[in-house]
Image 1 (cartoon, rainbow, N blue to C red):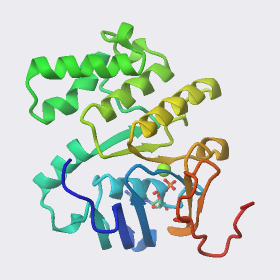
Image 2: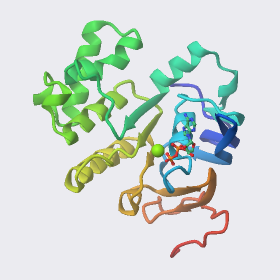
Image 3: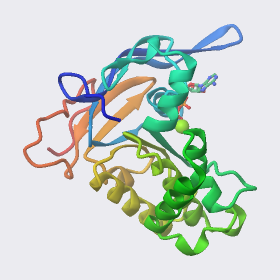
Image 4: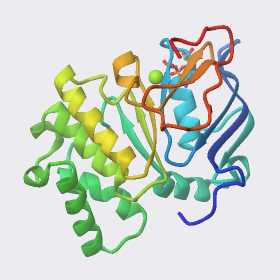
Length: 256
Ligand code: ADP
Ligand code: MG
């Protein structure tokens, strides 16, 4: 958590990332030369049609998957050169994942679900209990601590998942369609919570299909066929921010 980012301040630096899946005799170019830099504290939405490579990109950023070729530097460290133990540590301590389907342990209560990353991080029991309680309080679930996922609503499950994603104070929060399984009112509540997460200083990367959900971010990166089609600042971008938002590819900039 206390290594410096690389010289130009980018937390995430992807250069010419390719991901090829072998499907029998044919190959799928899930990512086809993606170059992208994300700074600490940015809030970026990734959009694009189904199959355009959004989840593949998130999995690579979160070190759940590795590219076929290209360079990925996280805080200036080349991920390709890390061994499995180091990657496991990075996943546990640097990255918080929030999924569309929540991915909670069904047999564990909310408290235990939130505590799990701290178990893997080797934190002592009392400290991790206390920390998990604190996180559940922050997402408004202090009263639901001892409920299992099937005793919670969809929105509450996603709150548990957010508490779990944040419990290790990761440098990046990755949310892959976090409101995809929620009704629109609950979705708005979850987006408000992600806003707080960002305002607290976190780097947030969000995949969504919905323009109004993406409008919460400061920047929208659009993928098509494994390539970046455009990369633009939204109205929520900090004032006076340099245009990290250079449209690329063929789509015209909208409105600015
Ligand atoms: P998105 O999240 O934008 O819907 P994905 O990143 O999941 O897209 O998928 C991008 C492309 O890669 C799709 O064509 C998908 O079928 C393919 N793909 C993704 N994961 C795998 C896999 N494990 N094996 C083979 N093909 C995959
Ligand atoms: Mg996906």
